[in-house]
Structures are given as structure tokens and as C-alpha cells.
Image (tube, rainbow, N blue to C red; front, side, top):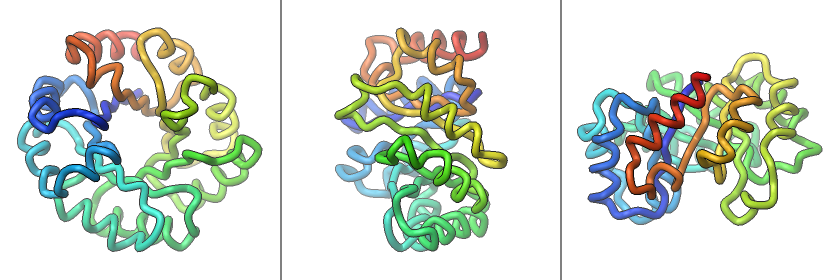
Amino acid sequence: MELQVAFDVIDRKQALEIAGALDGTVDIIEMGTPFSFVHPISIVREFKEAAPNTRILSDFKIMDGGYGMAKMAYDAGADVTTVSARTWDDTIRQAIESARDHNKQILVDMMGMPEALIAERGAEIDAMKPDYICIHRAVSVASSSSPERPLQLLRGSVKHAKIAVAGGINLETLPQVVASKPDLVIIGSAIANSQNPVAVAKEMRRIMEG
């Protein structure tokens, strides 16, 4: 089970310092969508330098221009980028093609997908063979929903991709998430905005490893 930390609303200098401290403790460091809006894409290379042993993800949530948008992330140094599950199939396929051409990875984000459609859409996307498919609770609804049922639905329909989960996960809720056995757990403010990000990340890793 992999661990990813997401930087969303955080100062650039602080984010780079935390990234360096977490290098080797987490598997993936994410430049979240808000962070990516505020800073130029060239900052990806600064994260690569700060955390050379950790994959860097640019959370673009691509909706159009699948190949070119993914290429932009990869050319900037990202190891992983994201495409929305709610866009056109051709856009998703193009983003996956770009990942393969650049020897990188792609995550398909299921944010906003109605629960009734998760299994069907998950199977459709899995057939395209992305690296990850993510159950993602939006920040505005994270407190009122649980990822357990969506994870079960996705697990039942996915045969190839790794399953990721994100949205409002902290030390208190992590054991429930881990019980659903995702392949990748994505943590935001619970690590990034904590007083001791390294200690929190290590404790989360301990919980994940059982």
C-alpha cells in the first residue's frame, strides 16, 4: 500500500521544505490543483530536486487536450498526472497514451462520479489500462461521506489498475480506509499542515502496514 501527500493550500517554501523532509518516507508527493494554479509548472523541478527519491504528481485533473496536457506535466518533470473520469473517453485514452510514450504514470480521478455509476465507469476506465483509478471525495463533502462503499464498488469492477483513495483522510479515519485495502492512500492537510509532517507520515505508514 502506497502513501501520497498532497500540497494544496500551503506556502511554496514550506511545501518544498516538507517535501525534502518526507523524501523516502512517502511514495508520491502531489502538487495539488490549488497549488498548481498558484505556481508556475516549472516548480515541479524544484520538488524533484527537494525529493529526488520520491515520485512527483501534478494534479491537473485534465478535462480536454489529454495528450498535450499530460505531456506538459511530464515535460516539466512530473512522474504522474491526473485526468478526470468524467471527461470524454478519447481524452482519457490520449492522456494514458501520453503517459506510456513518456514512460510515466496516469491517475484517473473519479471525483464527482455518482455512486450508482462507479462500478460501470470503473470497468470502462480500467479497460483503458491507466495506472491508478481514484475514489476522491471533494473537500466540500468529505465530512459527510465515506469512501468505503465506493471503494468496494470500484474494487469489484477493476482488474488492471491500482485503486487510490483521497479526500479528508486523517489519523482517525485512516484505519477504516485501510480496511478497504486500497493500493494508494492520498493524504492532504493531515500531513501537510500538521506540526510534525514526518512524524504523522510515519505513523500513517505504520497503520497502513498493519
